[in-house]
Image (cartoon, rainbow, N blue to C red; front, side, top):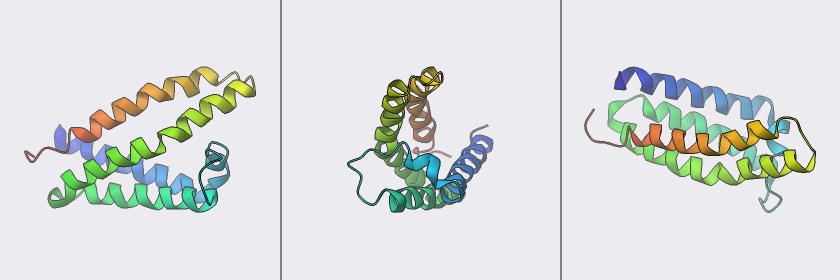
Length: 120
C-alpha cells in the first residue's frame, strides 16, 4: 500500500505543477501581495512541485523528497490563507471550500511525512 500511494502522490504533484505552468493566472490571484515577482513564484512553485514529485519515485531519494514536499507545503500555506481572505472579501459562495483547504494542508503534510521514514 505504501508503495502504491507514493505514485498517487507523485502524480498529484506533477499534475498540480503542470497546472501552475499552464494556468498561472489562477495562482496569481491567491499570491500574497508581499511575494516578490509573483509570476516567477508561480512558475517556480510549479517546477518545484514537479521536481519533488519526480524525486519521490526512486526509493533512494524518496525520504528527502518527502521532507522537501513538507517544506513546500508550509511555504505555500500563505497562498491558501490569501485565498480565504480573497473569497471572504469577494463574498464568494466558495469561501467554505477555501476554508476547507486549510486543514487539508495538514493531511498533505502527514501524507508526505509518511514517506520520510528510512523504512520502505
